[in-house]
Image 1 (spheres, rainbow, N blue to C red):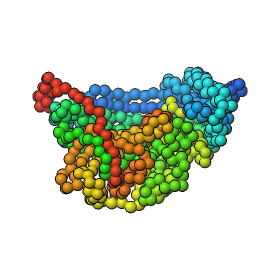
Image 2 (image 1 turned 90 degrees about the vertical axis):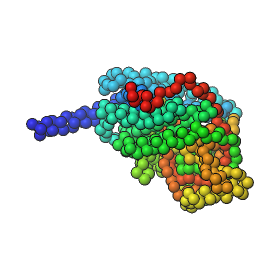
Image 3 (image 1 turned 60 degrees about the vertical axis):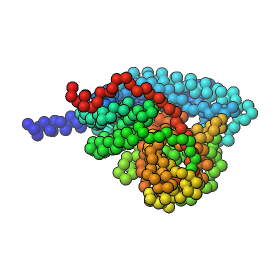
Length: 565
């Protein structure tokens, strides 16, 4: 009977997988049929369509939030969305053409939610609706472009879109990992981890977020691209908020980003990391508030990674070279030295892992259906290339597989896996020695060591100062006279890109990985930075806003009180 049961189970699994594959292929067929119908009609209009793009995005997600030992939310969810994008005119000039006054219209897809059905009539009706709306959006843009052709400053020195070869790529439907068993397992883990914050009543928040997604995207274009690929991710984030002795708030966090929950550290090792964070945060309670500073500093791999992502990465996204509102920091720097000779930087979405750790900025084809490529942007300090989408700019006519967007947004050139490398490196002791030596040379009492950061931002418009900001969560003063390092708080790292590049002095031998999400014109996308630590001769800091919290009248229940009830 057991043998018969096993055979039947196996047959059912095979039938299920076959049915899934058939259903998935029918989606492509339905998308192609509706697109052919729409192109046949819209290409004959007064404002003709020359290119169309359809996407279906299936998302299966599991999310849990726990706080101080209790689960707040725990959900399994699924959704299916559809986007239609239409280009009017021609590859040479279409509705995304830059206007003389400096505006740069983006392709605006129309997005609708699709029902979980494979009924062709229902699906095509929703696709028809979305396509009609997308066409009207593009028509309004295109009419503005046509009206501006005779205006002073109207340029047409490069095409608005590049052609791509027809291709078919299909990844098999993966086995689902999102189920009640995983939900129950991580509800226990999240509540247990968050309960560690109960050891100190100064904690205002002690939250654990766990999320895993299995996504599948289907892309069909009027050029003949048919791509079905999977995207899977898992993130565990632990965030603590503590009240300091002067009634301010201090924050710290841990983030783990992998492809699959099975790739996360063991729960025992995560507990150790969390306990170290809690101990660190308890020290923050009495740490002094840092004053504005200018002088030498050490950046940990994580801090240096965010530093390079903000001040360098966004400035090599190629579409900015055609944006008259952008400062175009590297517009005339191709073939010139922009970084120290020993530094090279590449962006590689084809790499899936680094020293066994998952790289979240990996993909086979980008969001415009172009094969991902490794791009060597800087070699031995010299700028060699830019990240390109299918939007060409002068001197760069082809995509190199970096057209990226979140669902519902039009793709532009964006970062993927950023790899910062140095031919010449120093160990930690040597970098600290350089820091102290530079402090003495500049007659500074101390330098800074930025160890942990939560993120950063950059501004690159011609209408405002081109500054960047990195938000550290763990910062130390390193004293030139040999006194022990001193933790400080409420400070951010600021500066301007070109000045900061000139202050980079040495790199460490300790490259580490820092995953995250990057937000820009085309939405929030996953990226990863691999970077060593760096010593810089001069950085600038400023105080962060103070958030005053009154000490509560009632004493917060202690862990002992809670556990006794």
